[in-house]
Length: 273
Length: 298
Image (cartoon, rainbow over all chains, first blue to last red):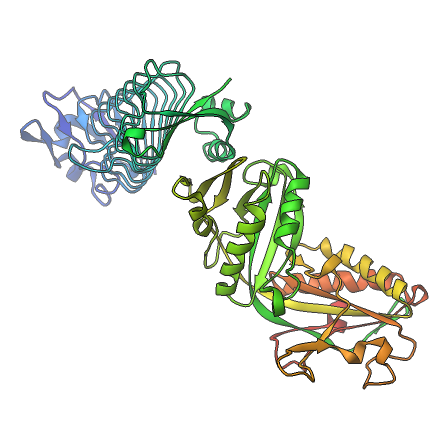
């Protein structure tokens, strides 16, 4: 059985909450019922069939064709199956997802992997601000799973992150890993925005390039060959070619411990040439 | 049954149910991994007084280990999961954590988990770091040469302890040579260890003693110097006896090791001074695993 395909008819006039269309929620729903499902478009409901042409198929293999940059919360709360977005995705991609896999061919908007708990998200383009973060007022951001961004990420990537792994192959914006509680963020790009690790409690931020500006509240702990990095690279083997290339180099890093203004048990590991 | 002139006595080895686990110890070099493993498995010959029985299962190539460094696989056996937990904490804490360059990983994933890094992490005094990678959780404990990396938990399995063979011969050198050959063959069998020094025990014991409070004492029936003095089990021409004790993760593994050991000991034949192979048991009442030598060799 081939996958369920939703082809965008035209970009919607307002932003649309696409969280009702996940593999979990589409189980046992036929094409006609799917087309009549109401979606919130701005402040009014619109039938899914008005926005998308539906080609019925396996809901565990859901494809969204077209520029979905105005569609928010794609794959929210999903626990199974796969969603492929053939263009861009809107805000809050994979919010609170627990399992399954999302692949975005384009870029994702603000808050991708927000409070994500499990599963995998792969974004071929870039990701907006607060990647893997938390909703305003929430104490914990991403708490499990794996996110791979092939392009750049915006500001505050990994904000309040609690567990899981984020790999960003491109550059990252300012305040990466801000207020981080635990987990691992790896940025492989040539540019790292100012002040990474702001108010970081615990967790690891692994960088290949030195940040523009550094916080004075990170303490230099010297250069070390950390055995754990070998395990990390092995566990993530095949997820990122750039990361796999690192495995051929000795895992020598400069360890900066901080943020000393927030407990200081976190770390920025600067990979050494 | 006679193999190469050596009589295989019609008896059986009686073995017990135990709880076991496997650890993978890695280091910068195979030598240092072996050093850590030898320290970890030292003073672990018998549960009677050591708390556990432990030994090196086999060396591991760098490609076989979780962190890509050379290593050693170690098996540890105890009478209960609780005993095993205490031994794990104490032995890994004192012998692996302390050894330069080591890391320690779970060699068993299934079965009721015991704490490994989960028990040792407190040594980090708050500077320890937990990392979950995939389905595994590791602890990074800061130590003076860097970090000690360790799995959070290790699985356990029901296992078999106390399989054994006794080699009877015409002289001490002849029995030792046969026992050494048997040990070499048995060590090639996976999932078993031979917990005694060099794999060989000379002081086989019987249950009880004439002295109060001593649970085991010398097996006088197999002591050649007491042949005329006690109810001996030794034919007149036997001058020495050595025992090989086998602990294995499964009864099949113990059986395979028993077979390999007897075959190797008998390869020297009666001409080499090996006279008889037998085994120790308690009449079949105490242990639930019986390895009948003639069936094993059939």
